[in-house]
Image (cartoon, rainbow, N blue to C red; front, side, top):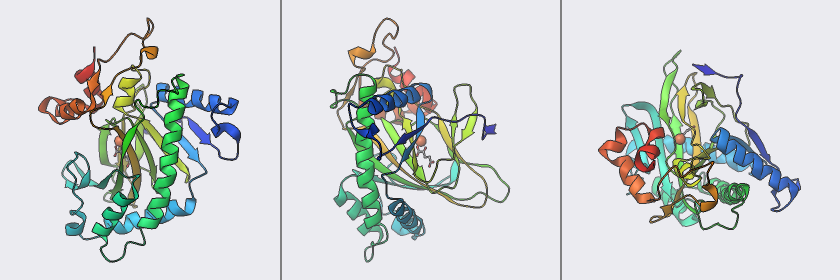
Length: 317
Ligand SMILES: O=C(O)CCC(=O)C(=O)O
Ligand SMILES: [Fe+2]
């Protein structure tokens, strides 16, 4: 069952016209505390960010619409050796879903090659807007990373979990047949460190509360949803939880969304810092190589395990 009103995830404003974003100020410490509490209690929060030019967000979504309108043979040219990247679509379990994954997305050359591959003659509609948006997201990513670490008093450990390679994913969910409430993306937790997601104001994203209720989110036009991923949960010794979410489609509009998935660089070892392990919080997960977790997820055992349980089965003590 879905409820719209009774429950809200925390809404946290990152306002650029206050001193709150200056590291070390009282406002900064309050924000870090709220971010940490949201990640611990909900596994996600709505982040209101006034620094992202609203115009480049609108232009990016208009480019994304045109991207999904391209012929299938062009869309399929977006291939990647990485799992869940490249072009995905026509999947029997989620027939409304299509997506493009673009690796190394904070790198202009990588966005440019993608754009040239999709529009060999004219990519002006997509590239300039998405470049501005991604530049702003890069800054925002860094800010949240610092906040999470400062929230635990570990701000000097920047080399740790938040040092990520970003995957950009652009998604489309087709409107379902008239009158239906239909699965757009199956319930899951995100496997990376974290996810930062925004949409074009067509609802569909739902999160599961601790007591098993599904809540439909309605983020504001300049909001992002931040999700704790499985790796951040493991790194934080289970103090932060990765929230289960899904997309359910209803109504007559297609939904478009854009997300940055932070995953650690290959070869990273995921290990809770000793400061997060004590008598009250005994060690929950053993340390592991991030790529071994990726392998597990793609193994027969991993695929047979519900996504929110995978980390516990793979690394639980
Ligand atoms: O498109 C959305 O709103 C959700 C996407 C998502 O959860 C994912 O790709 O992991
Ligand atoms: Fe997700």
